[in-house]
Image (cartoon, rainbow, N blue to C red; front, top):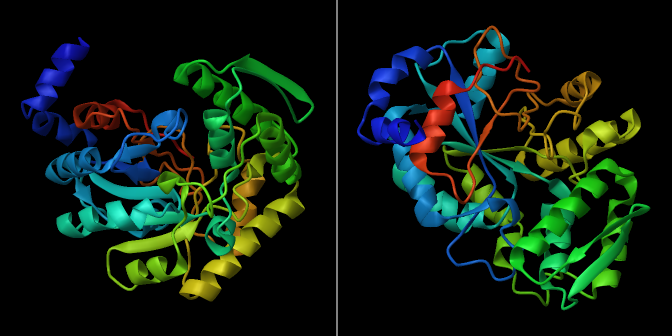
Length: 339
């Protein structure tokens, strides 16, 4: 059945299916891009850095079958009932990796497609690695054959003999940190790095996938008419696991830096991690109070104006192994999510 579905879409049968999704719109999520194989075992953990050639191929498919609109147009349709072209989609990028400028931006300009990049503002402002990248680097580059790690008062252990084993250990460590005290994430990473004997440092490590955008690159993209910028928190913590005062501080710090560096217009937001439990109903309210117009999740589904809210709206992720036909298939068959 999967093979048949692939053949139908690959041969253009998608055009016959599109009328069934005319009332829906979709938000597509990317992270970073690459033009080289992974430098270490866990650099592309989770497939979040896709090859630029695959990125171009996916966008060409999307441009052929859907109408790519600015994210703000979909937010206005969801929150204000404004009209959209049939089969509208918006392109989004999480975190703020430098490859959004060096690799993604040229392709977006070539194809004339708008996109929104959500910035983890401490990552950009202080040029400090995201905690997720620190975990991936420490586990991926450690020379130890096995690991027994104390992380957030939990022991996480496993062999490090193969890339698959290292990726499995990264996943375990991340889950422990995500569930832990979000104010201690920096300490968790330091402890992990000490135990593994490896530390990610942009000054000494050649890690192009992990590097952040600069404000100069961001302002250059913002000066055109294709790229807009939103918030992704300041410290990239899991807001649903934080007390309200921390959520307010995260939102306000992120908002203030975006306003200072880029101007004061209303901004969009995407939740770090963004799965169920990573945000609460009152988290939506706190972000709205800070001035954000939406808060996107990573729950997979489609959006329907009048049904889906912009706070908690779903997105469909593109990973390094995503084929264009499978992405389009997921878009057409995913049930609406009401946020």
